[in-house]
Length: 220
Image (cartoon, rainbow, N blue to C red; front, side, top):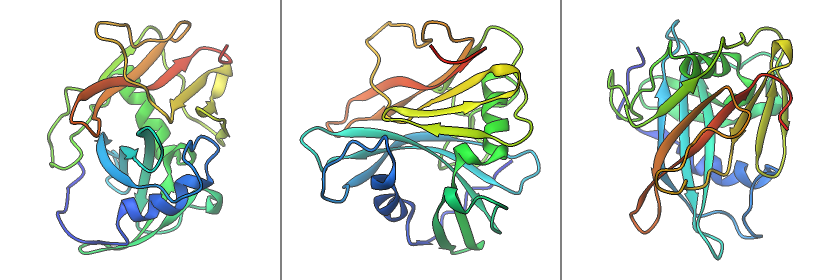
């Protein structure tokens, strides 16, 4: 169980993301730096209690239309081996000291726990409260979920990130989630599992959208 410490972070998570997001191929903002606010998300527990796992939805209002971004992050007390390319930045935590923040799609701990969430063997947790399940995060699974074993193959495009898993399976992260129409299915065609959740738009409206989808083979 992750313990949520209400303390200071220098720089803050949003300050780290302000510099990092424009370097991503799925960033849709303009030439000015993003204006970010935290709009939603959830956490997952690391069974070993060593790695912080957060799925943050951050909204950018710097462009003509607000854009939401899904940013899976891991927080570690020491650098992750061979993951310099995935480092978002470092922070000074008021309780835990120096923390290394990573793009979680490159962190096997996050990927393993995300697959466990899809399978139903892990529970989404509230972002800002200790030991508090987040029942607004939904998931489904139609078959056995592959393990995240071996080196991860991660590919970004203009809408999201594909992770190649064993046995040819693909885990798709929707980095620019869109609000789903009321009553619409959140499971995309061909997917064998999914994770969806809510976030708040700048006008205060609470919406729900697809965060991740699992496919048994290459994504069509």
